[in-house]
Structures are given as structure tokens and as C-alpha cells.
Length: 437
Image (cartoon, rainbow, N blue to C red; front, side, top):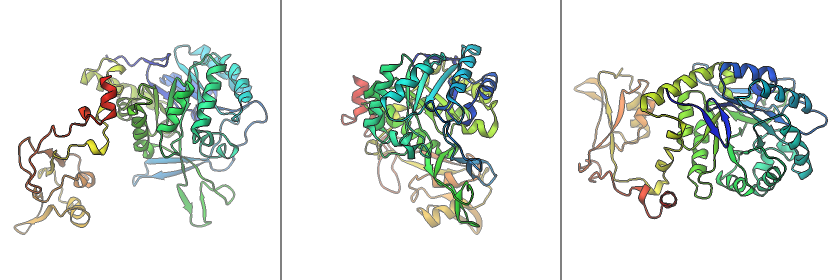
């Protein structure tokens, strides 16, 4: 059996699946249920400073984007940090950690960007026995208007400053949670590293309005006739999260910085992809809110079975394995050539591939042969774009097949050379230099 035990910046858990800081981790009742279901750790919902508690809206807090089958693709939320008293949360965290010493318990924190505020809360959190803290620099709504959350995460100088305070005033590992609402994710990651962070976590939610109620002309979710921008999460954000994780993992200035991957993780395969792109573990929220805490059991068994099948003994065999194959466009092999092939036995003659190629691509698919409805790729016109594969409703009916080395492409007249401009050894590639060192 594959070993799924996780050691993330010294924080140990029986598996790499943590619940992210969010409504599912707002109280001891939820967290206890999560641990019983099998989650390896939780990041407790974000704590604020001592004083009057945050007040959340009591109307709708979530807006959704669904697929054609009503499957949840994206969730927008306008909920703020915990609206429960700080000391109630701290007391419950301490008890949960005593009850579950083998599970990771991380405290997410968001207080004003003032040294005294951080200095005051850190000893209180440390006394709970929490395994680490996560600095919430990502929340894009509500708290950001108060100078916290993404308002800090969008300013690298502030990130570095707060991380330095936290490293000065606590012994606990510091994980810096980054906002995706920024042009270049590498800059806040570099700032966090410069401040001494032990790790980064990403992505937090994406600033969004998911829809507009066309009866009262207000954004959803609508509260008393008004709406606000919120944070977008769920399966739809996974591609954005994967890219940002990879950018940090392959940046020479943050190379080796531990990453906790977040963003649309719903299955074991999603988790494996984050791990392959450099994440040391993963955090999940929307999937648990959609399917319940027991979804982690499918994630655990699925990841374990796949690792056994592929011969991966532990998580170290996976983490970062895909990073060397993430290339800048300029290093891609322009002499690599692939063509689409249609399995005629699997084809249901729907014509989607033909319409997509004929109307919007390269007119490389026939729709008739000898007066009979028939779809076939013309190699001399196919550019290998993969559009037909993407729109085909039958899995594996259309596949991309690489031309063998030395063969001639009928369309371009190029000879296939699979080793041309191999980016992993290209002298101008900074990651190649990093790997060599």
C-alpha cells in the first residue's frame, strides 16, 4: 500500500487532504465530524482580533454557476471571517487538538495590518496547541474594504512586513495564503519568502460577480435588493490555481518553497495534479460543501490505488514531478507534430467535430464520403489543434497521434524531430540552470 502520510513544514498528518479555512471549519462540531470522516487536517476558519465580533449578512451568502446537468461548477460567497467570539474559537481549537493529536490543526488569522495586532493574537493561538498558522492575505470581499485580506495580499511589501512580525512573535510554522487577484503571483510569493515564511498556500477565492437577477437587476446573491462582489471557488477555478502553483514551483526565486495547493480540488486526480505541480499537500472546501465530509474517503482510496498501480511508494515520489515539464512557450518543440484520428467504431455520427473544425478551425474533417455521412480527418489540413477532441461527446473517440520521428508532415513539409529545442536543457532556460545547480 502507498504511504500517504504527510509532513508539511514539520506539520504531520495521516494524509495530504486538509479542509481549507471556510464555513466547514468554523466550529468544533464540524471539525470533529471531518476528522471522523478521515480528513488529515483542517485550517480553522479565519480568526479576527479580540473585540466585537464580525457581523455577516443573514440573507443569501452564496451564488452558483451550474453545468447543464445542474452539477456545481463554481461557487461565489460573500461570507466574512468567523462571526464567533475569538475566545470561543480558541477554546474549541484547544479541545479538538487534544482529542485528535495525530491530525493537523492550523489557525487562519486576519487582523489589521499593525504590528501590535499580530503580536497580541499570536500567543493566544499558540496556547491552543495549534500546529501552525495561516495568514489570510487572500479574502477579496468585505474584509479587504477594511484594509485586510487581499488588500494586504496585493502589496508585496505588506506581505513581507507581516510575515516578519509573525516569525518574530511565534514559534509556530507560518503559512502565507496568497490572493489570485493579482497580475503576477510570483511577486507576493517572493515577498513572503523574503519575510521568512515557512510555506505559501494558494489560491484563495477570485473576485467575482457570478450572475445578475434580471427581475430586480441586482447581482446574485441578492441581499435586500443589493448585491456585492464575492469570492469565486470550486471546480471552475482549478486551471487558474494549477497555473499559479506551477509558477511559484518553477520560479528560481521561490524554488523549493513549500506550497499547499488550493482551488477546485474535487477528486483524487485533482489532488494528484496539484502534487505533481509542486504542492506538498492540498486543501479542499467546495467539494466538501457540495458532497459532504465523506468525500475525502474517495480521495484517499483513489490516490492510494493510483499510486499503487504506478509504483509510487509515497508522496515524495509525486510532489513536483511535473514541474520540469512546465515550459515557457518559446521552448516548445515546433517540430513536434500530432494529428487527430477518429475511431470509426466509436463515432456516433453527431457531427460536432466537423462543425467545430469547418466553422471555427481549419476545415480538416470530411462530413461525407461517397454520399454517406462519414467523418474523417484529412492529415494534409490538420494542424493538431485538439479542438475536435475537446468537443467530441464520446470519450477517446478522437485521439491525437504523434507522427514518428523522421516522417514528413504533408501540411507543412516539416520533418518530425521529437528532440528539437528540448527546453529542459536549453541554455536560456532558468529552471534548467536551477536543476543543474
